[in-house]
Amino acid sequence: MHNIDKHTFFEITRNFSYVPFTQSEGFLAMYAVNHKLDFAFFVDSLEEPSLACMGFVMKRFGFQLLVIDGECLLDCNNIDPKKIREFYRGIAQCGSFDMVEVNSSLPYSALYEIGIREAGYLRPVGLFSSALSNWIDLQQEIRYNENWKRNLKKAEKSNLRFRVLEKPSNQTASFTDFYSRFTAGKGFAHYIAPGQMKALLQSKNFSLALVTDETETVLAGIVFYHRGQHAGLFIAARNLDDKEERGVTFFMYDRLFKYLKSENYATFDMEKLCPSTHSKQSVFLFKNGIKGRKMLYCGEFSYYKRAIYRPLMYVVKRYLLKKVEV
Image (cartoon, rainbow, N blue to C red; front, side, top):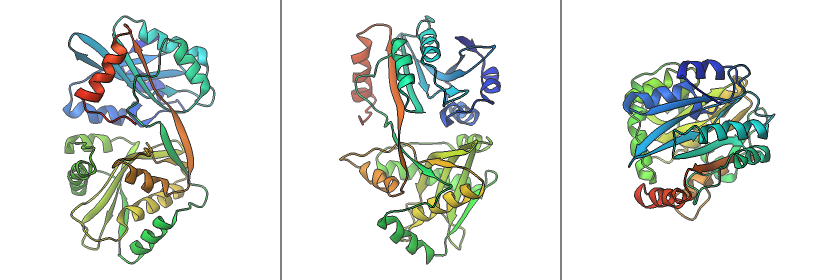
């Protein structure tokens, strides 16, 4: 395992088959705008790289925590548990971190789990990120449940317009504004500053699609990640000032799928299905209304230098950071 700089990291991973959006150059550029975060970059081999990741370093109360959200693989269809083991063992034992938290968005692989467990990582006490998703096959006819069909019929009568922006515009700022209000209303407040959105959309792997009415008022928008033949949801929101029931969000996804199919993308990841008994159930029902293939990610694993850190991190997440278990 080698600690490298960010330019080397992105140069190496450019030819990898699997790079999740959380490991992309655009994602890093977005966070660099308003956050002074320390990032670390790792690769398994400089001569024959096959596994790499970046993570951000958090320093609190004298402890140093490394958070790795996903990893990059040269060939995600050929998982070698020995390489996984040596890579994550090297990160854990490099002496820099008291805790290492990994949240892998790689489709579940028993070989991956064997490797990372052999490196000394365990499932954390309590899971705070859903490992379930719905992948849509864009090359087949997309099938919807009855609720989706009803709302798409409403949309047909509403003179809605869909387009993918080629570069940031004034409407980008409009979307950024109502996205913050939308997430607050849904109970998972998430703020992205206009400068961050601009930095994200300057990346070739992120795009923004908008739905407008005949007056060019932005009614909904979706930022999606695309690389190779795969695309996936990053964020999406509806304008809460629009009170009409006209199937705007359903229309947006339907048109996005058609656009991606025309651009020869094969699959679309709906990201983070979270069936539950609380407010997030409505999001699950919406995403689950599209007939797709249920996917399970490898999910969360953690390494702690001392055993006592494991339950302590649960307390911090659950009661200090107010995260919701899933």
